Image 1 (cartoon, helix red, strand yellow):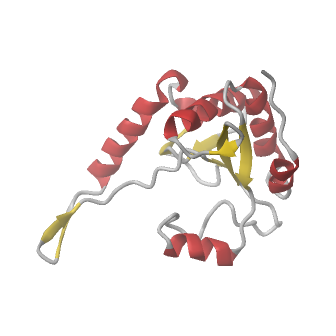
Image 2 (tube, rainbow, N blue to C red):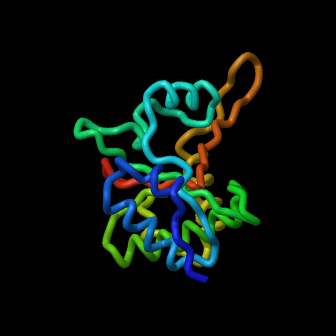
Length: 171
């Protein structure tokens, strides 16, 4: 089935860097999973609220417009039975479509499921395993710390519906 973005998704794409939006549009055509653009641009008030709610860890979000007023991130959320759903298995289908679109259109993209690699450097057939390997690398870099008599293991922020253009080098 060929999907198309609705009015809400198209409105949420306004102000986002055109190559990233082009990848999302191409991915929607390629995908076996319908999805929408849940969020593109954010203002600082919304970003601060997301940080306070632990839904984001940075005020330097790619959703915040740059000096030119352009955003560099999209949240692409699957539709299941007509409703937006954040379940990881369906988000992985969207990520695989974005992988192919990124490759086809030659747009380097960072994925919120695996923050330390370009999306096209991952195996699109095994994105669930890529999530697990990312968590292992994260834990190796961020060991447990002793706080108030207990060990606390920092956890990676995994956001499998988030896609952004690269502003920095990926290691």
